[in-house]
Image 1 (spheres, rainbow, N blue to C red):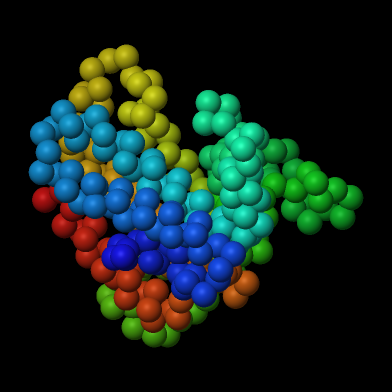
Image 2 (image 1 turned 60 degrees about the vertical axis):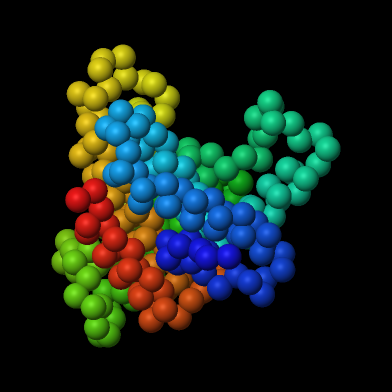
Length: 259
């Protein structure tokens, strides 16, 4: 089956990993299907764009983040898979094992929680946050991987997005940037998903705004996915050249999206 560049970049080379292959196949299909819907969205009427666009964007963001969680901590998705395979698993009852935006993906910074020492020797491991965009993952994974990107001397194909990150964001600020960006995008998309707006939604969600949000979503997902292939302990890694080629194709699509 054909998988989109974003699906391939996010999932990486997982085909030989039998334990997670079925999970990643399903998530790859989800991302590919959503991306196809997003690409075709500009052909729709404005009212359709503003109605379904935020849902597409949030689904894409959550799916990519779920894959990245699984590549950094396969146990998390394997545990969830086993829960969902049980006869006691019911669609109408929320599972305590579900991947949640708050906690599994988004996590407040250590300083936001009133602490200044991330490596406190008296802190119990059970109290350690393991959010994908939290400070612990940031210190152990994202910051070091992003520093590798900063140190690269290879041609980045004149990527405007990567060069913007490299010019504007140092390694020690990278986790904060992606966390704030992800939080802003998620909140903006959610207002269109949960019918939070009681004013005329088209005053806030005109089609240009929706296209911009979807572009921001895809760009963030592609940056995280690319940098994941610079994390030595991350599963299913692609070579950087292969990952970069997929990233460049995604960036090219984003540059013309909605036009």
